[in-house]
Image (cartoon, rainbow, N blue to C red; front, side, top):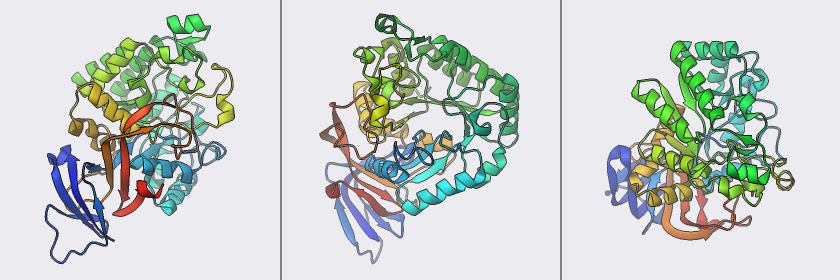
Length: 427
């Protein structure tokens, strides 16, 4: 398939590229910019006038719900949603059923994803057997099966001896440990930020210290063991400052933030909207502002969807009993554009937090518009408006606190290996 994308605004900060130009694709590769190679005859022409042509997006946290939770979502439904969101690569946590703690399970997931040929899927393996925090997994075998890092998902390791040994193992083989910082005894099944809103609503709170105490512990153990640490879903101002200090000191640490936490605060749970029941909880405006600034100045390396599709029944319970999580694959791009606009961040810089920076964290080839690169491409209209609704989302999970919001920025085409895997005209 030979494709000619014409009149699009090409943006790729890694190539210092930000200009209107044509791009030419053949045999799954980018073969020309501005000028077509000799003898090039396009099978298809995409008119990208008024659109941005970017490397495909990389999402470092998306629950696909297979295996084990197909009643919440299927691999096909969520990868279709990801393609619709302009995502060409994603990482999925290991909290499936069964847990991704055996090479065979990882290989099966990779095989299923490859058959669908919609998005590159990079699994995170379980750091401990069944995520119980007692015995570490065979990380090298899981890496050979296709895992790009090791995580506990939302489950903490309470035994610091196990955590120490897990990081020693990871450091020995240069593997990255992905952990969401939350001290479990302080969190203690809380469901909201420990503040005035939670007190007024009678909801059990999780103090900011639950995150900061855990960050201190994780940074300390990583420093002493030499492990590469990725902190997942920062949510507090103090946490951002701790990571900033660790980076200044030269520690090998990276971190991300959920797109929900860049825009929402604990005030958004005031009407007991179970769609705003998230992990970590939505925190104060001060925390949200610090997260925005941390992403702007590079302290926070990447933004992710933290995509967690939940079935309707599980969200119909009272707030405290409802299952936590929000769908986000199709909202990742427009909400990042909204953050960039509100914080006066240049589009080229904003796109880095969705493309090459998350790719660096995953240790995969960064998507690029360079000639001879794989043609994994996202084409989107930055000013096209659309309204978030259950009908407008392709994900099987319709649970998002942004239902009813108008978004700016809509993907028109997504290409994987030079093949069109999403075309808005066909939806």
